[in-house]
Amino acid sequence: MKRGVCWVYLGPGEPPVFPDYDFFHAPATHRRARVGYTESNWTQNLETLLDSAHIGILHSNLATGTGGPASAVAINGITAPELKVVPTPYGFQAYSQRRRPDDTSYLRVTEYVAPFTVLNGATRDSEEGRLLMIIPINNRKTAFWRMEWDFAHDQTWWRDKYSQQGLLSMYMPDPDDFISPLLDRKDARLGQQRDAMNLNNWSGFNNLIVEDLAVAESVPVIDRTRENLGASDLVIARTRRLLLDGLKEFSGGARPYGLGPQGDGTGIPYRDLRGTAEVIPTTADAIAFHNETLRNERIEARSTNPGNHK
Image (cartoon, rainbow, N blue to C red; front, side):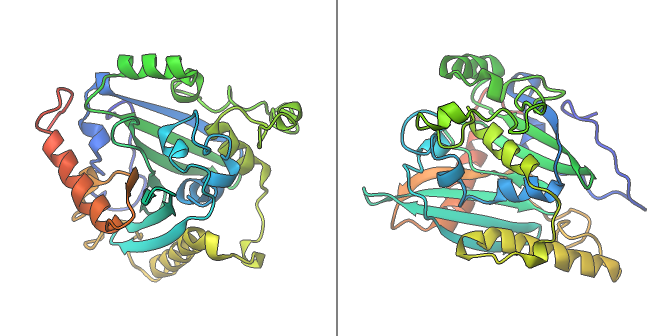
C-alpha cells in the first residue's frame, strides 16, 4: 500500500522501478486518490484524456470564458488548437495551443507515460496536479484512477473551494466509486437532459467529467482501422501508432514500451512530470515553458511549500 493505493506487479522477473510521481511525496493532508469503473474499452478513456482538441467542442459550455475549471475557461471559446506531439523515452508530450485575441496563447500540455498513465493540463495557481491511470479490466470495463495533489494547499482548502464553486460532487465524491453516482446507467441517454440542451447547454450534462464519461460509455468496441482520422486527431493517431509499434516490439522480445531507455523505469523523471494549462505570450517557446520554466519553478517550490515531503 502506498499513498492510499495498493500496487501489484503481475509480470515476470524483477519489477521495474516504482513510478515515483510527485503525488507520492505529498502528505495525506495534501493529496487524495479515487477510483471509478467505466463500462467502456480502456483506449476510449485514454484517448479522451490525451486529446485536447475536443475540449472546446464537447466542453463548450465550460470553455466560453465563464464558470468551470480554470483550465477549461482559459480556452475562451477557441475551438481550433495548433497541435504538436513530442516523443519522449516514456511516451510523448502532447502540445495544444490556442491563440487568443490579446496576443497570448492558451497552452495545454499532456504528459503520456505509456501505456496507461496521463498527467493532463492543470493550472499552477488554481488547480491541483492530476495523475490519471486507465487500467483495462476487460474489453468493456475499465478502472479509472484519479490522484490529485497540491503541496501549497491542503484538502480542507480544496474542499471549501469546490463547495463554493458547486463542484464538490465532481471533485470529491466517493473515493471507491466516483463514476456510478455521476452517470444514470438506467437511462439510455446516461442522464442527458434534452430540455437543458434547448436552454443552451450544448451537451445536456452538468459537468466536464460526466461529458467525457458519457461519450466513452456510448461508444462500442469497433474496428478502428476503418476510421479516417483528420488533422485534429493528431494525438489519437500518434497514440494508436505508439501502442501498435509497442505491441510489435514486445512480441519480438523487447520490454514493454514506456519504461524508459533502460527498459526498467530508471531514467524517467517521474517526479518532474506534470500537465500544463497556462496562458502564455504568443511569442513564448511552449516546449521550454513546459519543460524548463514550470519544471524549475516546481523544483524550487518543493523546498518552501509547507506540505512538501522531499
